[in-house]
Amino acid sequence: MNLYKNLVEKTESLALVGLGYVGMPIALAFARKGLNVIGFDLNKAKIDLYKSGRDPTLEVGDEAIRNTTVQFTSDETELRQAKFIIVAVPTPVNTDHTPDLSPVIGASEIVGRNLAPGSIVVYESTVYPGCTEDVCIPILEKQSGLRCGVDFKVGYSPERINPGDKVHRLENIHKIVSGMDAESLAEIKAVYDLVVEVGTHPVSNLRTAEAVKVVENSQRDINIAFMNELAMVFDRMDIDTNEVVDGMNTKWNALGFRPGLVGGHCIGVDPYYFTHEAEKLGYHSQIILNGRIVNDGMGAFVADAAIRKMIQAGQAPKRSKVVILGLTFKENCPDVRNSKVADIVSRFAEFGIVPLVADPWADPAVAKKEYGIDLVDMSGIRDANCVVVAVAHRQFKEMGLAGTLDLFGNPAGKVLIDVKGLFPIAELNASGVLWWRL
Image 1 (cartoon, rainbow, N blue to C red):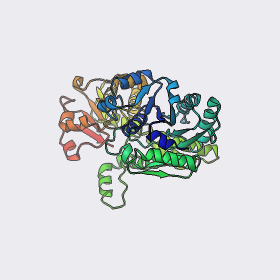
Image 2: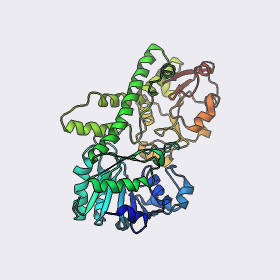
Image 3: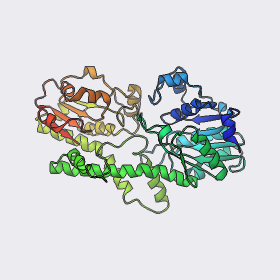
């Protein structure tokens, strides 16, 4: 194979299957290097947005979309022009926390139907170790009629895109690469080295590369779960967790994790992929699943704290005007996937509380479709009885405590829940509101 050379010389094309938070930055990066790039997504409405020069993910920006040479399409037959195909579709979990492989299975069927001999298919979607070989390759072979290892090759390179992060980008994050054999690994590494400026890190096989992805996010999940458990204990001890963490972080080997709501497409999902496969092999997780239980319960914990504070303030929570600031799973990002703020809303609903939710980053249509939540505009929020600052968006930080207090009118007898610890304790104590922070 000499696919790398052909891509650089533009006699062959590269394709991205899935143009979301992961696929779009990759497509644009290869296009900037002069490669012929086909960007495919089943969502025709999304493709139309890209063709009009709009970036709904806010990852690369409208200008970059307008100026790119990527050929956007929702016609799968156009993938037949490509010989190096990257699959970057989401891999969520079902309601019972088992892997939902339907997106990656569907993508594999599409790629297989349009696969040309001599191609390399690289999966970036997060899966459990062994999934690429046991699930994806058989689909590619069945749909194409070709033999893997003879007519085409397969690799795995786990995505490390951090939505909303303008510092850690594709170009400056070391990228894991793997191939089914030495030849495919060499080609895959050479291709990714075109866009990953800090270089790639090859591993010996596909399963190892798959394991790297699920383990790195499971590690973060467990560490945050530890901090969340501390927060729940410190709440009973009347100790401020952030102050404890600030003190702990003065030591050179502190890890810097803080309590919080753990959602999104990676940290709140990937551990379940790992433990699912482990259980199939007869091992029941002792640590990872317990970390997931802790983190999955934090939305309810925050809501319960808010209700207690409202009662303490003399309010009748069911009749109180409750406002939640933020819905996305993290700050300065429009991604609402697996948002744990939705868990706060659900917990409130158990007590007959219907909060107003405002988020300047989230798409109202997506919020309604995913969670049945009708977002409200910040300008219309007045006379709140309880405000939950759930996400540290730039706009909320810029409001400061003074701007947040304006949402109450008269702060006397009102409650402020500071999930992210945005406001200093001294200012909170002087504010006139009854406050609580995670």
